[in-house]
Image (cartoon, rainbow, N blue to C red; front, top):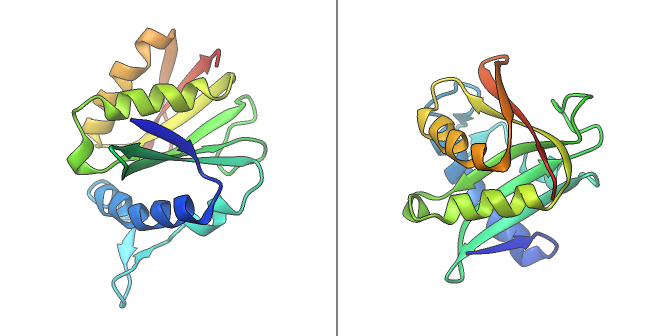
Amino acid sequence: MELIRVSGDRERDALRRLYPLYLHDLSQWSSHYRLDEDGRWQPSYVDDFLGRDQCAAFLIREDGAAAGFAWVGGGDFPRKRPDRDWRLAEFFVAAPFRRRGIGRAAADGVLDSFSGSWQLEVIDGNEPALSFWRQVLPPRGPYEEEPGDGDLVFTFRSVG
């Protein structure tokens, strides 16, 4: 597994191609995302996110293939709590790469990239994601879960 900080057009293009797969998966648990008349998922936050200076995008590669991505927001990033340094806004591993340790390794790599206090949210009902984060976070140290607005919010610290 290779975790690449997105900086060039090639990585941005790969992330943009993966993003609709992610929204397709999320649509199982949320009515927030929907297909428009042209078959595109809406709303799309990919260009907004990639244009923010206080954000970092990571591309996950496995054997050279684009396997997933992670988006980290700092500063005044939307929905980041004032008492948190970082928000893991999006995390996705494509279906062919799941249950092989790739997501776990990628999550550890992303969380180790920035020290401080973190938050991440999982949409209500997304049991696979809840199970994943409940396995990833405990070895890293204490964490808390609390109900959010249509989601469960995880808060924790990372020493980078």
